[in-house]
Amino acid sequence: MNIYVGNLPYSTTPDELQELFSAYGEVAAARIVNDRETGRPKGFGFVEMPNDNEANAAIEALNGNDIGGRKAVVNEARPREARPRRKEW
Image 1 (tube, helix red, strand yellow):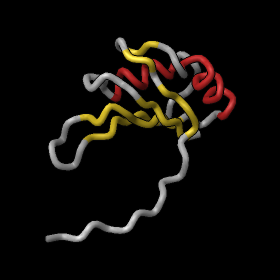
Image 2 (image 1 turned 180 degrees about the vertical axis):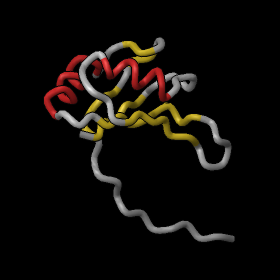
Image 3 (image 1 turned 60 degrees about the vertical axis):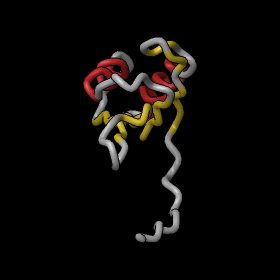
């Protein structure tokens, strides 16, 4: 299951995210999304957990909890919506 993790401190690393979720089961991947222009973290990321029961346990336990001083938003990731491409000027 792909899990969305939002409202993260900008200093959060993928390793910290993986460590946090590994307490609930196997983590296949953890990544933080960075801004394309600046390369800085955007304050959210995704965690991939192969076992749905473990993923649901992690969502239940971590949603609304304090992560690095911020109240985390943790839920099952929705498929990315198709957006029209921006015009290049």
